[in-house]
Image (cartoon, rainbow, N blue to C red; front, side, top):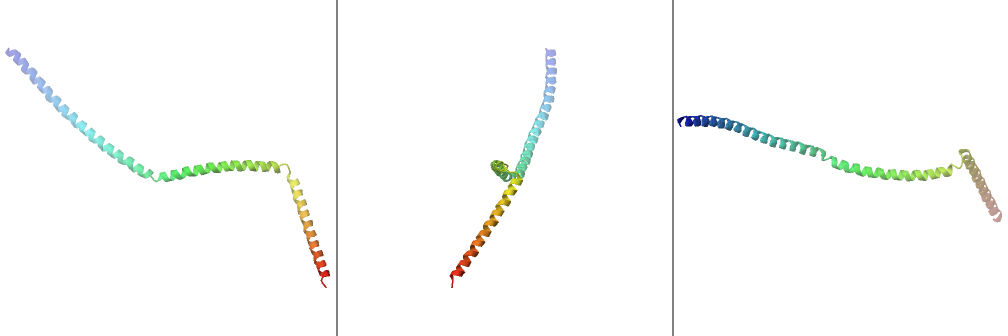
Amino acid sequence: MSQSIEVLNLRTQRDFQYVLKMETQMKGLKAKFRQIEDDRKTLMTKHFQELKEKMDELLPLIPVLEQYKTDAKLITQFKEEIRNLSAVLTGIQEEIGAYDYEELHQRVLSLETRLRDCMKKLIDLKKRKEEEERQVEP
């Protein structure tokens, strides 16, 4: 029995040493976990602050983006108006395209000549009228 108590005592001492060793390791792990948790909180705070600063830097871009969207809509409207205008101009060009440049030039010259003739006739009529009025007056 004394031998059993001796074995039990040795086993208890060995287990006690093992428990002490494990306790030291557990304290070390606990300290590491606390450090990791503190680092995580510090990093989160730091990252949050960095994100907040970046958001503050980007905040002035919101009105710029709104203006950009407005401008993009305006450009889309301009493009549509240009398409419509192009269609109208194509129609006019097709109408005018029926005449070549020389023919149009001849028409312009003819119209100018007719205009001059009309102006001469008007001047002649005015002179005749003035003469008639002078003859009617005693």
